[in-house]
Length: 380
Image (cartoon, rainbow, N blue to C red; front, side, top):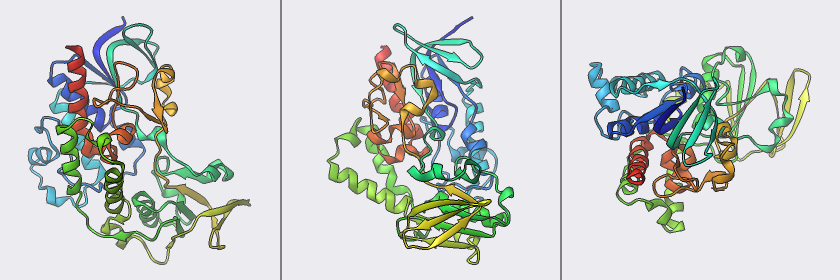
């Protein structure tokens, strides 16, 4: 029998958990579909650490917070600095249980809106009809590569979202393209697993490694809650100032706990450099850099981040012609609604209209509250 629900949440990561739990707590019949925390479990290394602390959490009602999880388990949060990714995954599942959030582990293959309601076709052929849909496209759909990446044989290249096991690169020569946290953390992980050489190539200077506070983000998120549409109404110069601050703290300053793991005899940074030529050689690949040096790699890792492109989300192809986008991002209302009435998008794909902080778990509670409030208002 086809199922009907008031709100269908597509995705089962932190943003989806936060929104679905808040919707249910406010009496909205909600169904959530997706593999629970799949990206965190399958596309992040098990030995990875969070950059944030226990103050970032999922609960829009501020009850089942990360700190409450530590208290419930009689654990002092100070024992985890930095916090292992596995601990956050455990917290997310604790949050799911505490909020009685049942996750349908099937996947949506297609979404359509043939009439006044949405119809989601799942990977087992069944359908769910929903009055409203809240889509949370994971960043795995948005992995970014330089235009020349296809010149490297597929078996010798990976994005950081694809390479999460490092045993096969013991004794290997590896080149990492990119210079932010993921680039240097993957370099550390390669050192941990016995890589012979790791070269990190990026256009900007070598980042600083220092302890930073993410508290500067808090007032921006508070403003978003207090004044809907706050970010988009800011003057362009003010938005750029905030983005530059975010870049300086979150991108050009990396975690100091990486330094002891970056073995000097293994890791070499190549700042102010770009790849200008690629040549496959025997069982390796040769990269020529803009400073005229040459590197030989057994494997190339792209730590180039993510770039939103809604057309790359498979289940949205059936409605893509009804969703306006700008530079790949959906054009959103102040309540995260797209140009297709009833379809909301939160998470990384909302960062153009809501600010860069909504690409991090910090934005989970506020985006849940705003999107669900909007859905309730429209329903009324």
